[in-house]
Length: 176
Image (cartoon, rainbow, N blue to C red; front, top):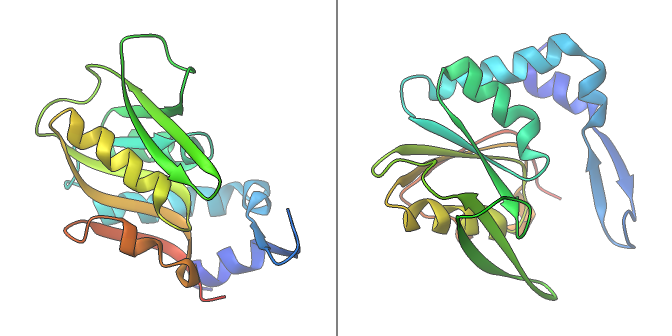
């Protein structure tokens, strides 16, 4: 069975959660299958091997596969966290949400200038969070060249909010 089919069989779709009209993709079933989790990490690693200098994982679900991916690639891992969760000094980027704004932060000095960066998160939806992470990476003089996601929700057009000069790699996509 192909990886995408295995993933699909471990992802529950819950209609009208967390609110009416949302079709929530629950991937927690993947964690019940250690072999599948290893296969996911291996697939990401084989795709990015030799291309990146570090992995940035976006809080909090971007940590789940982001850190093991960094270990597999033998590169550093940088946590990208919500405002106020990291000790100073930090670099911040604020971005717009549907109703308000949010801020992401990294610890200053953890991303070297000119580093080739892979930004990892669980889901690519509208792309706002990934774009904000890209701003952080650029602010410290590094290059957000790659993005990886477990799931991509194509119908939300998140790719349009991420730099068109970067490579985006998703393991499974949903068109609705």
